[in-house]
Length: 175
Image (tube, helix red, strand yellow):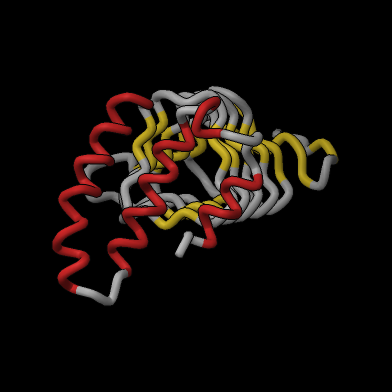
């Protein structure tokens, strides 16, 4: 049985993505690893887990995309322009999010708190979301932004550190 989340992921990719986009390889391995981990059969988990780890390391190395199975990633993930993408194993990412090259979702120090990202979040290239921040739904994070504080729903953020520029498409004064 195919994973429903992976079916939603595929809907956001062009036809025949395995031939066109390497990022789908990492996403397929992630979804498969989650399925293996949830398997009710202990024997099946024990047999398949080493194969998952091998596949994870191979795709992580060849694509530059690290999606550890401990991370919670909602359905409909789209990864544009693979490479240098790191999601911390404790991070939470909602549904229908888009990642571009160089994105990091992680902590600021060892064993520190991790981001919780809402649904429909668009990550620009090389955006960094660090620490125990909460990113709302329908957020746009500009390229090369460093998000270190919470972001409300329907916001656009940019900068180092990132500041809210718009909410509901209306300019916000950052005084």
